[in-house]
Image (cartoon, rainbow, N blue to C red; front, top):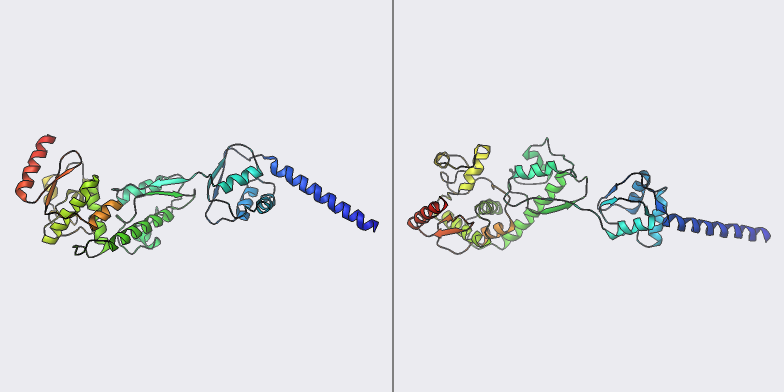
Length: 331
């Protein structure tokens, strides 16, 4: 009996000492190996994985202290993904609060409507928090990796701000942007006006990209879409400068000349009927919706006023007068 009591006393004392040590341990400040200390937690990461990373970096003496603490407080499933930065020593209980509160630093990248794919790819390649895995890939290889059915990259990626964890790859972000565009396009296609001269969602994307380059004025989008739809229905050439500029590529020096309008190439909508073969830029959702729900108008022409807005005409005589008027004003 005495032996049993002595054993029970020893066990009880050991538990009290262990609990006391654990209490002091979680409330004592951790000495960071360096400042600032950065920790990236990817979506789906387990508490065990995070604790193991902290132990490997010598932030924790052992991974089990954080795991036991989180489970005791029933917060082991509350770790939030994100990029965390510690700039001063911190207690384990405060660290757990930080990681479960989700007050993380989020990296972001923004693709702007009207950008070409080359502009998008340049920004993506230059972002310091993104791992570049596509530098040596051509467009066809890249499209295959993101699961795209199209054969050209232009216009396929939705212009938006994308948040990510440091160390994410460029292909991950491109895949997200591609599927975002695909989803928006399909949803807008389902709500399109009947009897449009557009056979596929991809043709709508091409038209939307032209509208995007023609105007930034919200009220003009649907009217410009109406002009292009009217011209397509009548078999008239679109005669839109942005397609020629896109086709010229690096040869374009900022001035569009008469010889450029006359020189035939696949993106010259002055010499070729119908839509160009691909989009010419990233269209916004507003331009996609305008292309698929154009304004009901008799207009066949429009000209920039010089203030961002356009003037629309039903016939060539009125259009030529408008062109002359606004060209004189600009001079």
